[in-house]
Image (cartoon, rainbow, N blue to C red; front, side, top):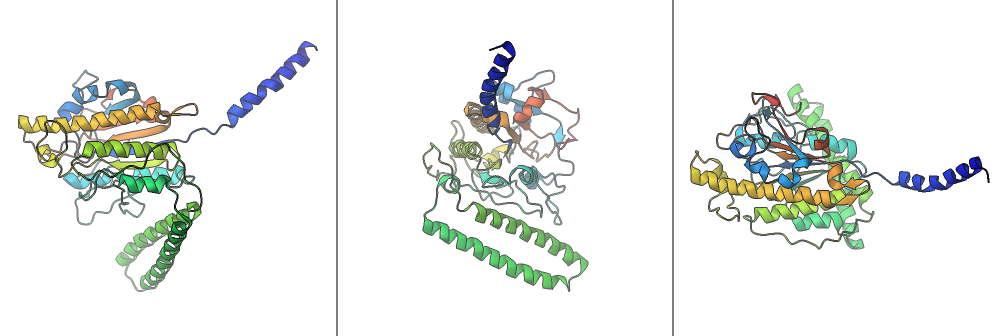
Length: 385
């Protein structure tokens, strides 16, 4: 065999493994947005001038090469104190006004682009519910806040537990009944539109958009109902009944979010970590969180609040490590997930919506400096830049 024939044959043989590797499906890109409704104390979160770390960021020292932070950012026109939480991912202005209408949130925009091939285009999850403007930051195109799931058991069933044939049939009947109700409502609304004035027609247009969004979700539910759900090596969780166990609840929800992304059940998740009206089971904490945020610069209250915020950040650090340790083709889960952790409250003590505390981790931080970035000396740069 001459040299040319040998190289030709060798090339043909070597091409097969290369082709097989090339045929492997690259893991998808994902988005996880984590909202901390009460923010973080600026004095402990932001590094001082000329420094790259802070007491809070020191807690994430093991993950320091996986994220970057920003200072001086805000949503222009987003005010209204706690009302601003619903605008964390939308940036819709003046949420405290009676005429306020929210707008499409970042997660839902991303879901429209990358969520078509998964069972759930997006998931809205919360550690607990019932606290105004803190349950969900996912907002539809029609300005409606999408409800979040705060039960770990229900979320696990939704993601990984296959129903019996009878349960599937019952689900299909509910979906079809929902479609019939939408048809009836839409027909009545269209008749009403003919006799409405311009202002009412604008409201009806918003209503029609909401109906179309519901129809889309119903169609997706029908398409996925008979497809098998992924199997995971993770036992069915039990809901934590004690609302004060916010750290344990956060850790549990972080686990389920990781599994949802890892199994490609969804590629877009929002998670709300609300600590309103609870006394977290954190050593040294005796008072309710919201009251502590209005500390009035009293040292004892600041010390308690710091313990709570440090506990939250420690669990977030655990989550980053678990994402990094979850291997997949060509890397790990953190390599393919853009993670935003932050709040629409820059200072809960004064109810300021300026200079928002923000951490950008995962794939997004690879294109940014893994350090502290200050875009402006004044806290008025929009977070959308």
